[in-house]
Length: 200
Image 1 (tube, rainbow, N blue to C red):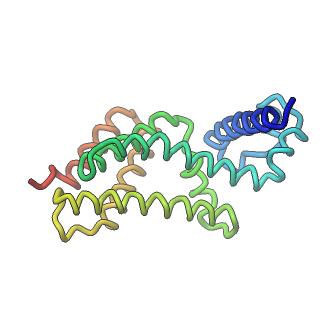
Image 2 (image 1 turned 120 degrees about the vertical axis):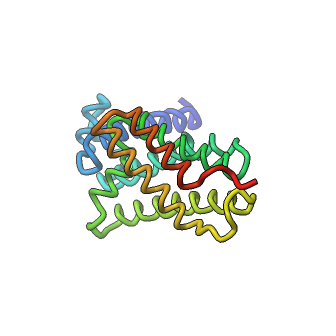
Image 3 (image 1 turned 90 degrees about the vertical axis):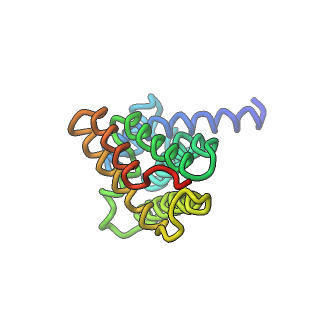
């Protein structure tokens, strides 16, 4: 096997391991994730998994980054096809609701936020960085809506982003404890109440 083929095989194996690790973290949280458990689920030796992730913490960090990339690809990237302004902001919100619906076992980033919110260290720092980056994307989408003249010019973009975040947290809660479709409809009505129709 030449070096390029070996590299591709290694990348494919690592990606497959991350998919398995993502599923474990979604169901059990990052604290439920270990090299041994991942090896068992993936049908590999622990040393084989260790070759891709040198420590449990390295694995946990990789899963957080993997989850963030999945979220970006599923929520943000498709929304960028919508026209800047109200249409794009709504597309982001709808995509975010779909993300919660499609990840029925839970979101590893949100679970990790709860697990590590009071525990200093590199995992908490990574979670803060990921959440800060997402808040910034939300704020930017709101500001584009203001700049497009579809929200009043004195709208506080950071505040609207905060409130959108809160709406999705409420949806996340209700979608798992109660029925998902009513929760989705309530969330969309809350979005429309918060942002209204585009200002003409």
